Amino acid sequence: MNVETRRLRLRPVDATDVDALVFLDSDPEVMRFVSGGRPTPRAEISDWVIPRARAELRTGRGGMWIAIDQRYQAFLGWVLLRAPRHSQRSEMELSYRLCRETWGRGLATEAARAVVGLAFDELHTERVFASTTLRNSSSRRVMEKLGMRVSGVRAGGDLVDRQPAHGHGNRENLGELEYELLRHHWEALVMGADARRHQVLNLPA
Image (tube, rainbow, N blue to C red):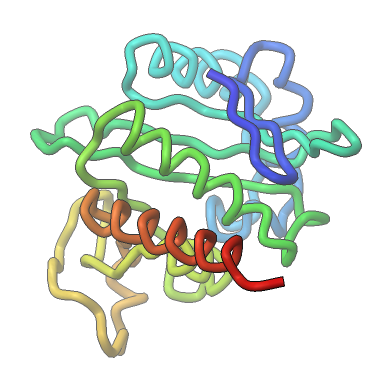
C-alpha cells in the first residue's frame, strides 16, 4: 500500500532497504532517545525488523513505510504502525524515524499524518498512540501537531499513570510520555481542515 503526500512517497519496507536503515540507525543523534546513541545491529534489521514489519502489513496489523523524497527520490527515513500484541483494544502504535538532515522541515509530521489517516480510514482502528521522552521535544511537537494529547506515562513498557500530564513535574524519571489520538478527534480534525480549505477556495477573487 503506497501513499503519497505533498513532498513524500511512502512505500512498504522490503529487503532492499537494509543498507538505508542501517545507515539511519548509525547516526548517534538519530538514536539518542532510542538507544542512547547506540546503532541497531545489521542482523537485527535484516532478520527481525523488516520481516516483522512485512508480516504485520500482510495481516493488517500495521507495517513500516519508507519515506522517499518526491523530488529527489532520496531515502529520508520511515514511519510505522503496529498493533500491540496483547492489547484487547482497537489501537495502533505510531513510530517514526527520519535522517537528521531532514529535521525541522515538517516531514515527520507529514509522514505521520499520512499513516494515521491509514490507521483510521483503512485499518479501522479506534485509537492511535505514540510514546516519547519528555526531553525529546521535537518528537512531542510532531505528536501535538497531529492533534494527539498526553494520555499517561509508561515505565518498562507498562502504562503506570493514566492521568493527563498537565504539569510534567518529575515524570521523565518514570519513563515515557504516552500521547493518543482517538477516532472522533481525528474525524473532527479532518472535517475542520476540509472546512478551512472550502472557505479558502470560495474566497472572492
